[in-house]
Image 1 (cartoon, rainbow, N blue to C red):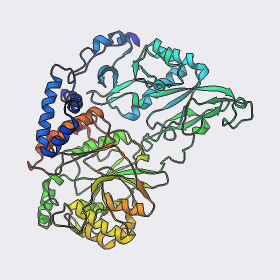
Image 2: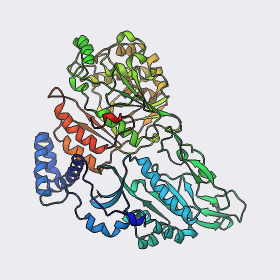
Image 3: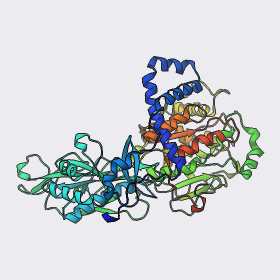
Image 4: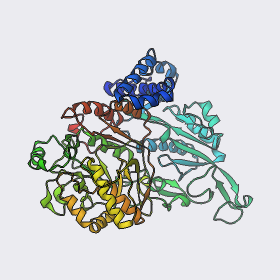
Length: 618
């Protein structure tokens, strides 16, 4: 009730994460000022002639000057005064957050996800329309993570009044997207103006208890007003009825139909048909009122199941260390047995959180390990399964193995694994909501993401790093089989793979495949199957094609990585990012943990269902 509403407040719980988030916002400002203060020619000179440490020191100096006396890294202290007049509509559990330099009212949700934010905004719009008796139906739009609701244009004013009544119990924001406007706190006056547009976006802002994750206009529900006409009066307009039928015409393009008959009955359509961004394998999928034109999947929809596979190791496990020590003398290159390859910074916990938040359509997650289970993992949680090396290796006599190339040759042997799956290392995170079509086409073809980095030319050399050696060996196989030159490495992103292609590779290149599987450490005869050879082989056989992805790579050994991570946190504009520990100077990775964990805990503050309740925060 409006009378029970509490005044706006600033929640200062979990101060470490909040302080890190404020520093991230300040770093973005510093980066902008660095670009303004330092001419491009001078920045280029510094990159060529100085170390990363010196460049970072220059940025820090500029930052101290820029932020002196600035509120960039401070909470929004004036927000309660600015927004107190709206306190009656905030309701319990609301707070004030900083979003794009603005103070916004947000509802605190303890188990916040993008799917939940989109559903809540849709529920708000539907409640308003249902209470006012306004007819509506959902439309399949091109936006993957937002819902569209179609309303007859004759009910504009009634829709405005319905939204205005909702202001008594919640803080609504409006965005007049037709005019390129920003979200504004809704008032009766702004609603009356907005419903004169052909379409608008309605939303609440949501945040987690620590205010690290803020979900706003990207998950708003869009209302569009469909104009009613007589079909015969609109030559060329599609429709299934006879001339003279009344039809509703869409004010903008959608994926299925720009006209429906007024008299056509509504049908219940599953959420998984209206949007690919839905947890279609997690319990019951809700249905919404729509029309027949929007009731079936379209040609481009990926409807087949997609699983996720991780390979993981805890290099601090004494039993594992003993197994490794027994065969450690066989490594051929100093990076092949480098301790950085086996140290865990708890990245897996946060990578799983990222998949849970941003890829809700994943069916099952498989965690491939060597007789290990993370202490915090709930192995009984639905949707996750731990798989031991002994379950998948065709020849168990080659175990134990400490070679990721060897382990990757056996992933397609996982029992129950779907034909289409994504392979992730635990240092790869999904940074923003994505849909299956980013990785696969509806016809089953997979996508790969080429890196600008080239595989060095020539034969394998003792000075080559193991990944380059494997790339050269892949090149030999591709050239023999297809007569083309393999040139590029692949980005450190989820690799879209097919079991059938991996099985063909196992048969087609049997000798190299067996040799790699039997190498306990990375060897100069290894091939890299999942991260390279699969993509080139599938491309040449018509089952893969290049794709595009918003991606960032972070080497934890580079000094400027800390500020880059804070910049990423402030922007949250990468679909995928990788935190790669290429070297570990301190042996146990203490300095890297101090860099990685605050960032990951702030970026992904909410536990996933795969974490044991008694292990939270450990």
